[in-house]
Image 1: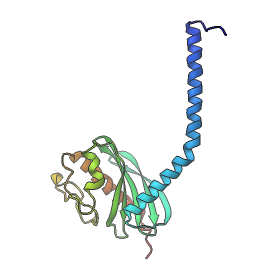
Image 2: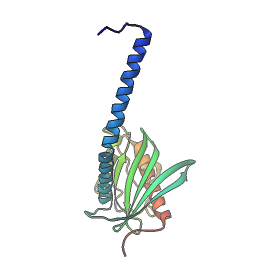
Image 3: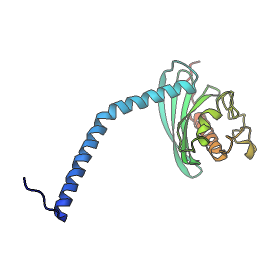
Image 4: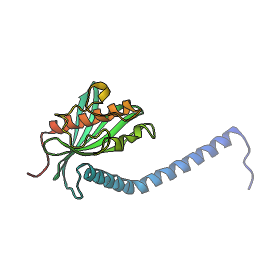
Length: 195
């Protein structure tokens, strides 16, 4: 076999061929792993709903997607109506590193049963503490509070909640996401919990 001549045309052909093969392989792998990724995402969401509603078993009866204008931005919220309460997925786009997405569980009266941080781009070791800082027994505990009765803003802004040390921007973003989850919960006009 004769060696290819080293010229621009041959180099471009080889490069295009390699790119097509790599692109085809990536498309195949993406298609092959799609069901496993979807299954894992569903399990993660199911586990998250159990955590935020503080229960071992939960049945999701209905899911609603709600789009609302919040301070001039169209934000999307997902409401999960269950037999144990309502879980609301909420995102605040103004975290220190960008979007901060939480899943918050409410009982029929709007009391926070629990929360979990689904996604964030906050500083590791500082803003990333939002997953634990606001839990029951922690310095900024929001579990057991009703946003209609408690001022869910940081104490620096006149609120009732202690900010994460050295992460006030993340704390504000987290609390805005929780507050917007509550507003969406109230607007959904249903509790989902069995009477």
